[in-house]
Amino acid sequence: MRIASLRRALWHRHVNGVGAPAAMRGWLTTEGSLTARLVAHSKAFRVQRLHQGPSTCLADEAGAIGMARPRRVLEREVVLRCDGVPVVFGHTVVTISSTASDWPLFSALGERSLGSTLFYDPLVKRGELEFARLRPGHPLLARARAALGGMEDTVYYARRCLYRRRNGTLLVTEVFMPEVTELAPNTHNK
Image (cartoon, rainbow, N blue to C red; front, side, top):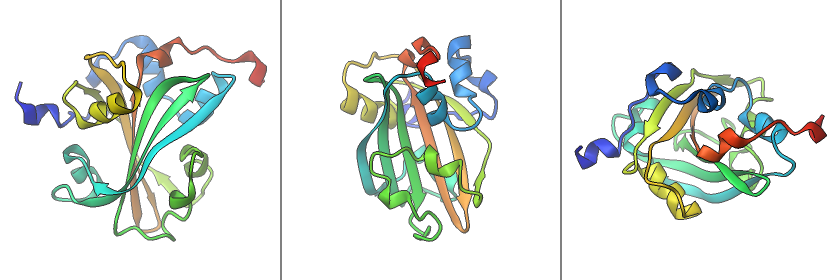
């Protein structure tokens, strides 16, 4: 397989396109806020912010956010942890042409969940979910590995969604760690 093809993911509009196991499919197709579901499946949920600032978008993100080729964006990367265990690597890009009025809370999120703002803002329009299998050469896996260490050289499943608010676009990609399938609903949260 050519190196260039490892750096791009083939995104599918239906989860069947990635052949994920049933337990993973359930997480990939979560309706509504993934954060809310993770909170309901843990005693202690945490957003660990890794990086936030200017960067160049990935090759397979450019077209999704309306760019002919990779250009400068604002980027945010986080790890979502349930009871201390990393279960999702989150990567968000916002076009530089988006203004503070398009995404007023983006720069001030800190270690708060982006989902906690997206799903409760009536101006936010959510696009369709897309799904992919990320192979070991994909840049997001390299970043997740650098942050988490100990990741196996295997295929990881991811989903992404484009959000619009006013004139701004924001693309959220979530890479699911295998440990997410071991989570069970927390009866103490009810």
